[in-house]
Image 1 (cartoon, rainbow, N blue to C red):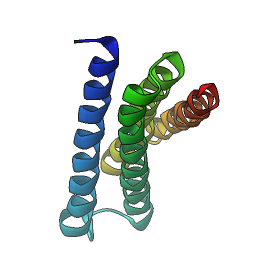
Image 2: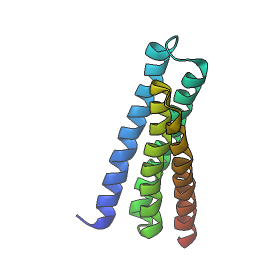
Image 3: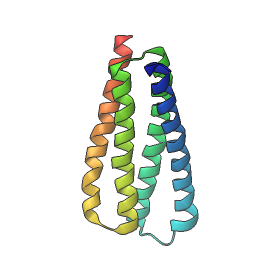
Length: 128
């Protein structure tokens, strides 16, 4: 299997799993966490799920682009979206459940990775 096919499969699988987790996280918040978490914690959870879904869709685009415009910028975008989602959404999920405020300090690093992913995606399109 070529690197292009491997990237497309890897990023497509990551996108699909991330999207499924985002839907499950949203449903979990609605059915199990409402009334359990504070309004601020629930808002953090919902932000995490929303951003995870946005970036699952972006990662699906990266999977498609891996077949159309393979190369370093597309690969960087994919890995940046994965890392950013883990850091941003993951830290907000954990913050919501644990109340450990220091976890909020990880979110900006995840946000920076997500921004980097979008910039790498732009780079990939410009290379066209």
